[in-house]
Image (cartoon, rainbow, N blue to C red; front, side, top):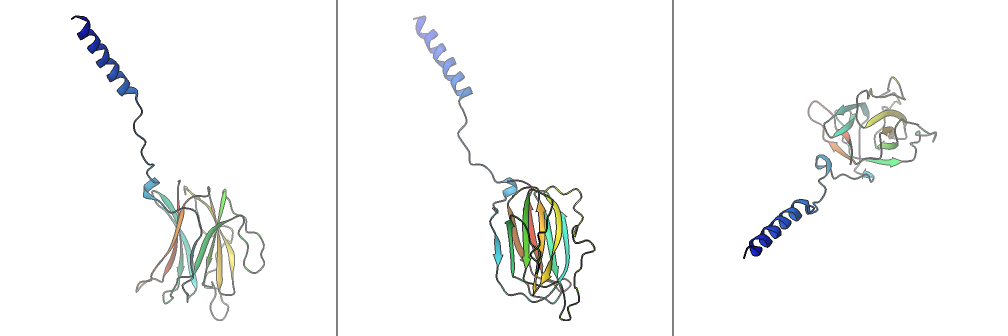
Length: 186
């Protein structure tokens, strides 16, 4: 009789020890900050009217943001944002090198000049369009030109990371904007 309680005690201790070291069931990976964007090209062929007025950037908790502003009376929709091996300058085809391990090419269906050919946006420094000091993901924004109704911007990023591109409609005080968000990590 004394052996039976001893065996039960050994079985109970063994079961408890096994349960303590057994791996937890596998769980699906939770997306970083809920980001599910991916890194494939983002394209819209909706017609655009208007001109590029400015380029700016912002830092957020989970991503860095690039914004391209159009004039206040414009409609906007045509864009093509994608990773490329090297961004090329509009018209000439010359390479536009940017810092970072990946190059995002941003092409807008809007010129950066008016009907007379005068610039509506002319960065002070074509190789450093926006100051990116302290950014997590962005490394450099370079001007690749505006030619035949299209404007191209080179965005150097830390790595080939998920991104999204979308248009925000204009308001009574602002024009429409192309927004490009690049996640800090996968």
